[in-house]
Figure 1: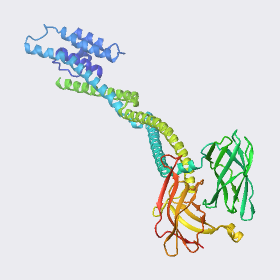
Figure 2: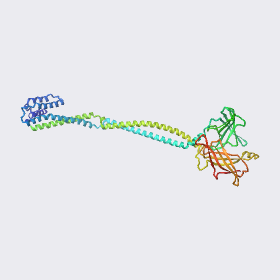
Figure 3: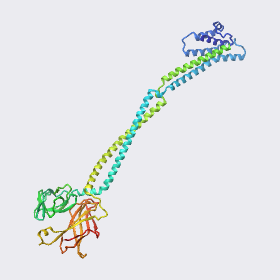
Figure 4: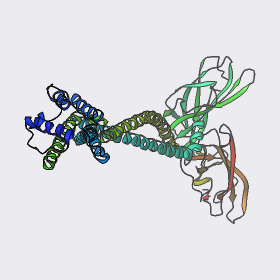
Length: 296
Length: 231
């Protein structure tokens, strides 16, 4: 059938006025030799590529235009124009069809691409999964930053609070620290406070001091306070050596409290010292809170 | 002849349409098959979100690292300061008390006009001395190292019998709020039945400007101050 149609088409172009639409071989034989040759050319080499076929068709059309036998044409100009137009229709149509097919191909290709539901592709799935984790990580990291900032604010407000508190107590604390610190290295150190004895109305507390100097001391006195359980000073007084005694360099020397105050129930805390050397130099100082004391 | 030509044309058009359909179908299939989802706008939008989230996460992690360091430093500072503050507070609780501003710097707690115990023991025969003892509370708000108190002996008729006596204490360390006893020896001049009345005081306390030195704080006692009758 397609063979037949092609014949007809050739026929049609050649004569334009053929009555026989049946398209038999006999009808074809009516056509001129050139036409027949072209037909063979077009169809006899069966395995043709689409490109070859299109080229052949175009070639046929153009050849026909060129070799159109002028003598067979009617002299009438309009008829000639019609013939030329007839001859031109085929290549133009083919070109148009080709263009359309290319367009269709491009459209098909594009539509094919678009038809893929990217949202359902494994790549897209992987990426959205990745986004889920990345978002979760991001949230977590934001939370971390917030936490750190909050912790820093907390620490800072704690520091402020502490600074405020220390400022409030600063003065008295420094005074207390000052009071508990010895004023200088003591010339006599308390090494022992013995039990007290009572005789008559007097209480005696023997105390041993060590002479830290390289001088012989002619006078070595220790001042003490008796502190009760509440930190109140119930009494204060002094301890000194027997009249006329001296204390040799680096020696331990005996002194005593001789007082009508009963030390029972209080703590005897040495407060300060006062010494005079053989050369008559006097000095004094305050003990620190770490001085040896005794609770009676 | 016309019908034949028309038929052919229809066939041609039909063929072209079929070919077009086939071409479309094939290119569609190939286009679909060769489609790379990673080049799709939708995919790329997601991918760029991922990249953005990841880079922000990195930035945040860097920040967190720096902030963690800062936090740890502050925390160790807090720890040190807290320990220091606790030590301070311990000192304050053990040794300090808030001064009562409605009262004098040396609050008079009690007075005892003791007779010399030796005199009592011996039953006379020596000069009689009184040992007036003034117990005062350190209300200066400072550490006190010494104090003195001036008092008068007021006769039974209300006149001043002796206006120039004073008791004192030195070589002591009196923390705020604690009491100390100021003593004097008062030689008797027929004072029995007279009244001892404190007048004014002076205290030696830490100088807030120079912690290793002291300053003097003075004050008067009001007329309604505690008094004691000499036995």
